[in-house]
Amino acid sequence: MDYPKVSIIILNWNGLKDTIECLESLKKITYPNYEVILVDNSSEGNDADVLEKRYKNYIKVIRNKENLGFCGGNNIGIKEAIKRSAKYILLLNNDTVVEPNFLDELIKTTLKDDKIAIVGSVIADYYTKKIVFTNAKIDRKLKMERKIDYLNSDKDWWESEGVSGASMMLRVEDILKYSLFLDENLFLYCDEMDLCTRTKRKGLKVIIAGKSKVYHKEGRITGGAISPMTVYYIVRNRILLSRKLLSLKNRVIFWLLFFPARILRVFEWLLRGEWKLVKITYLAFLDGIRNKKGKAQRKLS
Image (cartoon, rainbow, N blue to C red; front, side):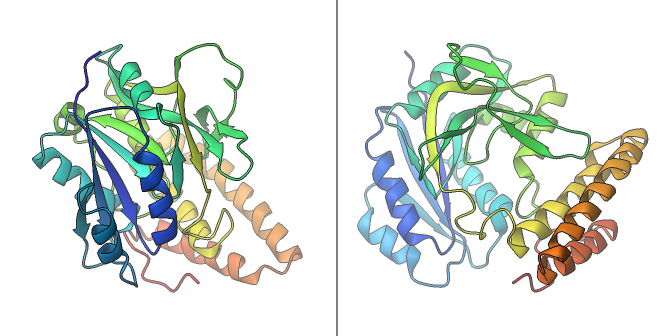
């Protein structure tokens, strides 16, 4: 088997404990030709100093002067990896723990076909060890629904409409040829849906490596699926992506489906007294319609 160089990019933002656990699991992997680029996204404490001291011979540390979000922070790491002659780039969330063979399986899968541009891992819940993601379906509301259709599959790999951003590998050649960088206008969330959609429109394949398993602490940094930060970026970014990715006809369909669905969710939060989430949803709609991009210029906590 060929062992092309892989740059593993880990983005840290106030997540020192999780990042250490992730790095310790990486040190046990069996793939022989890789490096780790740790991008600290302007953490409030001394995370970068602690990590550099503890792993000085194992990681390359990049210190961002400001929080560039998931998209901007990872793009910094991607550009550094390209300078360092990586053949593949793996974006790995800092709140993950990996199986020792997870990278071998990603590489074995991508080498099967030159049209394979993105390869993702099967995702299991860190706490329960239950598999929560084997593939994805992107609906007309631009919601990337996580599915477990291949839970008991005996296949080694399969195509998917999207991968989990927790573990996502790309070929450098494709990144450069097709400009497959993350969209920094999104800042946070929906980035993998956007990237996978753009990739497939280039005639390339998005694949899940069935034997590559990663354990993920979902929503560890942002506060979970219904935190104000999560709600804001998911709602706003789906509106931004409707303008970016959809034809006029499909944008009409998007709004006919998306708006009623969000109104129902708002009523649910009203009944539960979740006033902050109601307000954040309104602000996200407003910013999405006004085409406000990048980091939110509003307080989201």
